[in-house]
Amino acid sequence: MGLSKIAGRMINSPLGSISSTIVNSSLRRLGLQIVRSSPELRSLPSYGFKTVLDIGASNGDFLRRVRPVLPEAFIYCFEPLPELFAQLQRSVSRDRRAKAWNLALGDTDGAGVMHKNDGIFMSSLLPMTEETLRVFPDAKHWMPQDVTVRTLDAWAESQKLEPPILIKMDVQGYEGHVIRGGRATIKKAQVLLLEVSFVELYEGQWLFDQLYDAVRELGYRLVGMTYPLCDRISGRALQTDALFARSA
Image 1 (tube, rainbow, N blue to C red):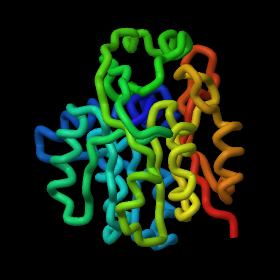
Image 2: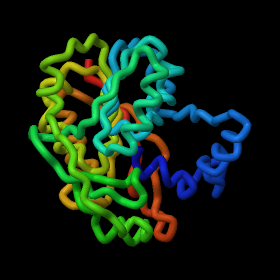
Image 3: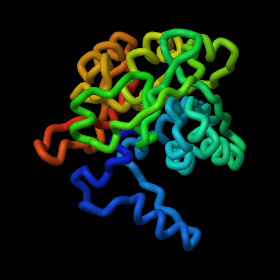
């Protein structure tokens, strides 16, 4: 789960300053939960996806959101942090067409170190920049967390991924590394759903222009974006989710 998800209260929306987290915590006492119908999900059923790769699955939020619109797709989930993976596994255990791996995906196979943040959904294999700490001052406390890293292409070699394929990627600035390690698999997909940044929030991350050039080289074109996460002081756009489809 990326910054644009945990900071919904900072985005211009019909809910204004009301946090969906607060609303859901109240409803959970009644056994209820709000499931968002996000703009980036509405067009997905038209592609008839058989396979979804949920890279950066966090606690299973995307799995729960996408399942109602893709009821028959098999969803492969990847989450490196143990605490979030434990929550993800609980969601996967209730879904007969999902499986989870306790892995980070990148451009090498081996060990990695996550910058595990107090705001756990902002944790990354890349260190945060001063800009992120300015916008999110509570994120300054972190600790190292050892994780296992594999390339997407190495993982996919032992899998039979049935097309059409959707790849969702929300990896806190590590998108470029995942793409470098997964070009062959990405070329086999039909749609990419990527969290993209317009400001460097993690050191060395690919910004939107570089990501767009990379996926366009792999045969994709931009077909849509969601409302951006904005700096509430300057109004500058920081991040959004972008949908890319393979060119005809």
